Image 1 (cartoon, rainbow, N blue to C red):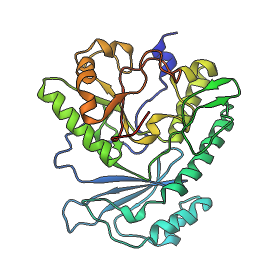
Image 2: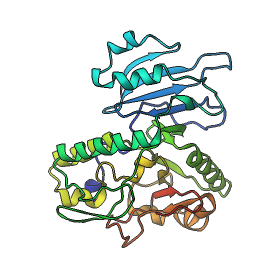
Image 3: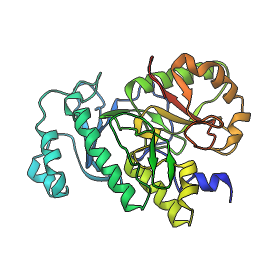
Length: 307
């Protein structure tokens, strides 16, 4: 079995929505993905300043669209297509005060980070149990190492942000979701590489805990052992892709998500220049997390932050 077969599921990209062929960000209308505990809200700016935003309500479990509108519908109308358990969250969104500002996005609609973190950590735990995956014994608020039932599981918890911005599309044409700060850094780094004649192409970025659980489930269905799966895939709730600050990169030729990326011209360029834009290689050889070497996996770290 190849390392690629062990690493990849049937897909490796973003979890929400479907995109058009890749395009430059210049001139792209703002689009935001707002995270809820059971739902996700996709907000896209209108064609002109006077045009209303377009909203799509998604089931965060599978990215399925539940409803879409341009002017806020009644809670009663939306309640007919939303699971009853999600009604309180939907009600909060529809009655949130404030206006949508195209320059900053629909900030008043975001859930408090602490509320979202607690709810999604509990959901991640439920997903791990449903997949019969090892549960870390300690899931404290800190990002300290924890032990699993089958030995040392060292990847820290990674929390999803309340809101992400679309920063173009990945190689499969899907929306590329990143935090606003990571998106700006990614654009700057990609432009600098292009100025040096190099292509940096995004394979994937943000992935939800539900999407991560789907990747693991597909690998289980192919008969891979838990040990093999966890060598190349994080437990739901522990993937850096949840953070919205990670990009898996491709150099434009050869297979994606393979060690051969280190032989491309892009890899030494990243080693020399990525730090200027706040990006670091998360999983080098013999990394302390016990994850296989991933030369394509780069994480944006704000100044002063640590892996």
